Amino acid sequence: MAYVVSESCIKCKFTDCVDVCPVDCFREGPNFLVIDPDECIDCTLCVAECPAEAIFAEDDVPADQQHFIGLNAELAKIWPAIVERKDPLPEADEWVKVKNKLDHLAR
Image (cartoon, rainbow, N blue to C red; front, side, top):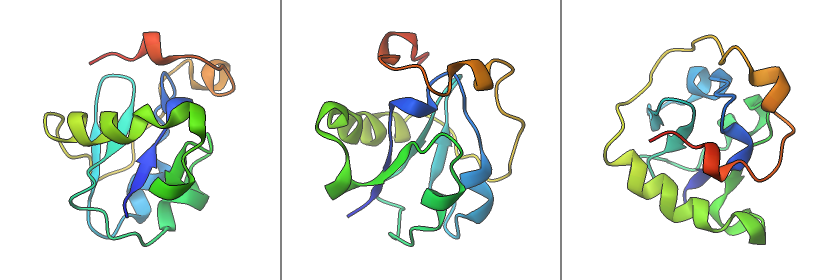
């Protein structure tokens, strides 16, 4: 079972989670991060570090966020690895609690 980045990350892209990942399983897109399910070792370290509360164990992804399981797997194959913390997007504080952001995902 891998961990999954959900909708709360869109347009925020806090990277606190990247710093604690022992296997560098995060991938970076323009305004979203994903977890490569083939690399994730289920260590849970990233969950507590995410200020957007966007990371869930695959079995705990909320019902309305289930499509993010496949989306993480899909985008992890094409986006580059991110291995160091970066500043969040400039508008992150404004977007962190916004719901229904999937249409804002930049691929």
